[in-house]
Amino acid sequence: MRFNKHLVVATTCLVCGVALAAGCAPQQAADGGKTAEDGSASQSQNEQEQTLTPEQQAVVDGAEGTTDADINEDAYPGKEYVDGLWDRWEAIGEEYAPEVRTLPNGQMVQRTPTEYAVDPDAWQIQAGSNSYNTYWLDADNRGCESCHADMNALLKNLPYEHPVAWNDELDSKMTVQQCLFCHSYAPGYISKQYEFGTLMHAVHYSSRNKTEFANDYQGDCMSCHNATENGEGLELWDATKYDRLWGINDVENVQGEFSIDQEKTQDQSGVFSYDWMHAYYDNMRHGAGVNGLNLEMPQSLFDEWTITVDGSVNAPYTAKLPDLIAEAEADGAVVTKTSKMVCNWNPVGGGGVTNTEITGISVSWLVEKAGGMTDGATGVQALRADGSSKRAFPKAKVESDEALLVYKIGGEYLDATRGYPCTNWVEGVDAQINSKQIDTYHVTDEDIDYADKWAGNPNGWQNEDGVAMNKPNATILGVPDGLLVQNGQPYTFNGYVDGFDEKIASVEFSMDQGKTWTKYDLGDTDRNKLVWWSFTYTPELEGAYCLTIRATTESGQQSYETQTVMFNAKDKLPSPEETTVLETASLVPPKVEAAKSEEQSE
Image: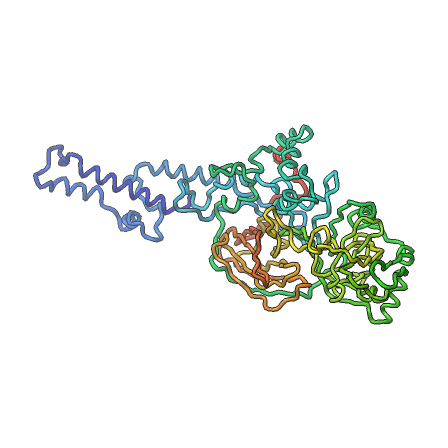
């Protein structure tokens, strides 16, 4: 039985109550007669009956290091009952211990904190075996990942193909926060019929799925929601759980080792592609690419591909891509550089970013080959071969050599997913201007609002109030909810920060739910490259922690949305055999079936 100092306090109060009651009661001598007027006989007897050993007195006084085992059961009636309560609570704590899982990639997670220490004002304290999170809140069986252990895997395996929002090489972790980023306010991108609440309630409670959800997975409203008296209605559990769970250690002004790197690059396989599939060639690229059949592209397509430069130029032309490359190489107009690509719609925590080595022909050289722009030209439209995109970029991007016709990524010719045989690439603007399979650069004299999202140059996704929700974007990568780490040993977190068209000025970390922040100034950074960061922290107490990150741009714009990850530091990490081993990450086995299998194995 574990010691709890609050039991000592309660017992002390009981002793005081008994003593006070004894002082008010009629006092009798040992022979049953009344005491002397000075009460000497009774006083002597009470002193003898209530004499405490030094150890017992220490318990009464609440001395540090004493235990409830020192209490004299004769002097403290009811202790046996209290002991029974503690034994029962210990058993409940063991039965409802938080689940530890081993994911298919070998990472171990515990999604619910172990309550090593709890609020001393709590009404029910169980000295290290508290099961408030699991017994009362049923936290192990709540939230998206209680069933879908890996949300990326879920999206990959949907019957209807979801746009590729995951990034395996970055190891970004899809969460409900990212789902809400797209499936809420997205005019022109996602129609109202796809809003999150409409979809999720229909999916889980439709005639097709409700029986399986309710019976096999024991699902109900509380599987996804948190109900309170705060007037907010049914909150999403995943969005509020860190404020509700016990056992999360707060660290004020967290300290660690911090560094950044802007030269780290990804190979072509790590260059994100959302594969929107909203035009014919999009579908072909998806089907032939790594998320489809992963086919090798025909050389003839590259050899016969043509590029046209027309519009407000003095000498329009059309030439084969290989001929342009050879001529540009001879003129020194082929550029190889490290460059980032960021989707305007990339959520906080998302994988819609890239830092890679690109090789291509400067668009300024292509325009000069056409005799240069005529007076009044304002910019260039990048046209896909299938006519599905007419996004444009301003003249300044041409003049600054931030626009390229790219045909290699990471030193390799493009694959189908990345737009074989060539793609447009413009730095410092939304990735949708990077039109795949481009075949025409149309120089325009139109008065275009180049900052408009439909032109292709927005920087940050804005909500209904016009506030950029992901500028700057500060993201933690590779940490599934509840990741187990070794207590007392350094653990290095990694991620990226980006400000689209602005430099990142500083990065901040908090481990006390945003009460205090530790700030790191970055100095001068290149706005056309991602800022990769690493932060090494050594936990000193066993238990759960939450790490939150935010950033600030050079103009002073601070992260509107922040990302928080929870991890669990263990003195002794379990072996996989001591955990629930998941063979599939998209959906865990139904709980009812899992229980039957366990009974059969016994």
